[in-house]
Amino acid sequence: MASQRKFFVGGNWKMNGTKSSIDGIVKFLNESCVDDKVEVVVAPPAIYLDYTRQAVNKKIGVAAQNCYKVASGAFTGDNSTAMIKDVGCEWVILGHSERRNVFGESDELVGEKVKHALEAGLQVIPCIGEKLEEREAGKTEEVVYRQMKAIIGNVTDWSRVVIAYEPVWAIGTGKTATPEQAQEVHDKLRKWLSANVTADVANSVRIIYGGSVSAGNCKDLGTKPDIDGFLVGGASLKPDFITIVKARS
Ligand code: 13P
Image (cartoon, rainbow, N blue to C red; front, side, top):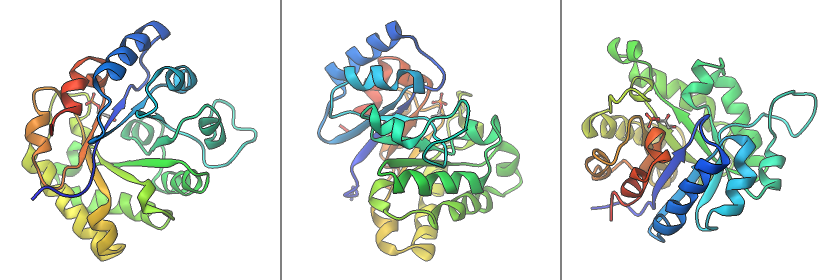
């Protein structure tokens, strides 16, 4: 039986785009991705949050790709939750694997950011996922549980959280986790949440999959009972995103 959890599709544009290319994306989003059965959220680079929020249909959420853990101050180059809200955006992605692995963000920092963003009133998409060597060493569960542990104590309102499981080896590589591999981790995460938070949270929180999701593989992934949607990178810049938004339709 399909779950009651609303299907969620996020588009993480990463460090890509110009005003002109965003115009093209916004056009297909507004024409083809507004669907009451699917929650769609796009995450432009911070410079374009305002531009995108003004152009995209209000039924589509707009997320920052990151923010800092305090409200304001001497933090050159960073963006605050207040700024994200000031330009009308509702969401923030935190702890993306590129933030963790390229910019060195720790589990602890990701947890602090989750706490601050929720307190500031944003909805958050914390990301977790193991590296290839960790999977090959049989450490997938250990890694994702450790990452989750740093997050759960900082969550004050689970209704504003969507967890993204993104195995690092599947991001931008064209090497998608099989629907079975993704389902297995999502199921384990839900059981872990039941044991470590509450059964209610485990049952209601959406766990979305990210890592080389494409127009070609989204339907198979989307049939799995514990995969509640996707966080899409490369394919979110193209009309393929429409097919992914409609994966369950
Ligand atoms: P790709 O879809 O390009 O593999 O990126 C996934 C991702 O990191 C989304 O946040």
